[in-house]
Each structure stands twice: as structure tokens, then as C-alpha cells.
Image 1 (cartoon, rainbow, N blue to C red):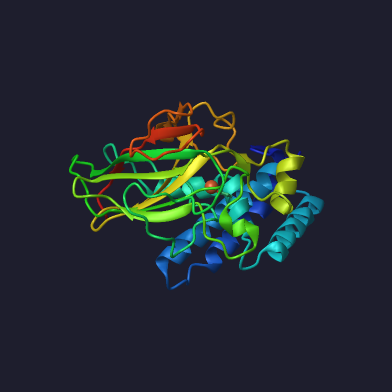
Image 2 (image 1 turned 60 degrees about the vertical axis):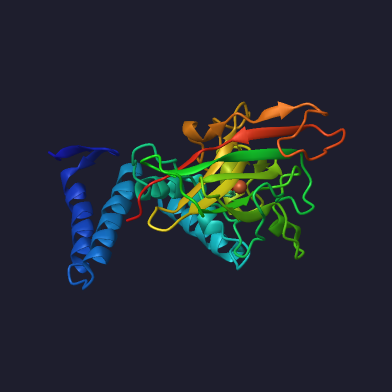
Length: 302
Ligand code: BEZ
Ligand code: FE
């Protein structure tokens, strides 16, 4: 009589189970001679999980082919301007999990979140209180706060990179011309304080005209990201922080397509009706504006 064994994928005859385990064992063994112990650890773990996945779902050959075809299309659409593999990692939560593993909890250090594809080097420098819009459309937003370490000591001269989409949901790099807008960098003052004019963030979709967009559609998921403003903050001897702040009340907070939202990063962007005096005396005429406070705490560097 055949001996059946319970596996996560259901009942499998013992002889079948042995054959499957034998393949995994041989592949693991093939990496035993790897000279780099870390590479060996990563690859052997990958093999264990990959084989475990194939066996658990009893992957059909048709499904395996569909997966290969999907990855092939992902490669074909990827070039210098578009990285569909990172997008895939983002929507599977692998990017956010890697960020979380690599930014361990440290006191009240500000939480990190995904980098995203829209950062560019050499953003313009603005003075404290300067405006990052450079012609980008959107409601002006006064952003202010402090940079401190986890002991509460102000961090002066921290480099603060900020970037965001305009009110139509596009980053400057998506317009296909040479414009540089809605991005800048500035430095915290002697007391660790910073302030600048940005744009009130609005929601926008991740690029969804490729295979990853197709995956989202097939699975009934939205490509929308919750409205956010990107920050990258660095200072000597402290851990560089890559994060965003999100708009309290945004409808996409619970369904952010890349799982980037953390409760601690959701901030109150306070609407200011037209005519409300601005913090720096700027005359915005008949325009409304918003304001938000974001106090940044940097963990020690490693
Ligand atoms: C973004 O923040 O803009 C973004 C992040 C991950 C994937 C796509 C876009
Ligand atoms: Fe973004």
C-alpha cells in the first residue's frame, strides 16, 4: 500500500516526496564549494524557499512557463529610464521588507520607506525657506521641522533632499524634457531646524502600462500610491534616512501599491484658506496653501 505524507501542498506519496527532496538536496549541495560564505548562504536559502514554493503550490509546467514569460516581458521593458524589476519588487512588498530589515528600530528614529524610481542627483540647492517648485504646478505647502539624533541633540548642516510629483501626478523626469522641478536640497540650520515651500502632495499611480501593471489588474489591485513627499536626510556619523511623509486623510493610505505607508509617517497637512498670512510673509494672493510639520530623528550610523 502506498505511503502518503501530508505536505503544505496536500497529500504526497512518500516516494514522490523523497524524489522532490532529493532534487533540493542536490542543488543545495552544488553550492557547498562556494568560496564566498555570504553568497553561499543567500543562494542556498533562495533554493530552499524557491523549491518550497514550487512544491507547496504544486506548480504546473504551464504556470512555470507563464512565470518565465512574465519575467521576460519585465526584462524587455526595462532600460536606463525604466526599471520594471524594481517595480515588481515594490508591488510584491520585497522592497519595503528589505528597507525594514536594513533600518532596524532605534529609539525614536524616524521610520524609513521605499526610495522609488524618481530621485535624481544634482537637485538645485535652496536656502532655508526657499521654494522647490521651480515651475511645477500645485498648491504651495509650507514644510518645517527639526533634525535631531536619537538623544534629542539638534543636527546642524544635515543635507535634506526633497522630491515630489506635481499636482497632475507627474515627476519632472516623466515629462521627457530636461526640466528639473519639484525637487531640491537644503541644509538644516545651527539649531537643526529646516523649512521650505513645497507642493501639497496628491495621489498618483505607479507606472502601470507594463507587465507589473498587468499583474495588478489581473489581481484586482490598484496602482495608486498614497499622496506623499519624499525625503532623504544625511549627516556625518548618522544613518542616512530615506523616507516620505503622507497626507492624513488620503484615500489611498490603506492600499498604497508599494506598501510604503507607516502610521508614524502620516502627517497633518493643514489647509490654509486664501488670505491666511504665510509664515515668511510670502504673498500668495488669492491662493490657498497648506502647512505641515515633520520632525526628523536620525539613528546612529553603523
Ligand atoms: C514613488 O514613490 O514615486 C514610487 C515608489 C515605488 C514605485 C513607483 C513609484
Ligand atoms: Fe513618489
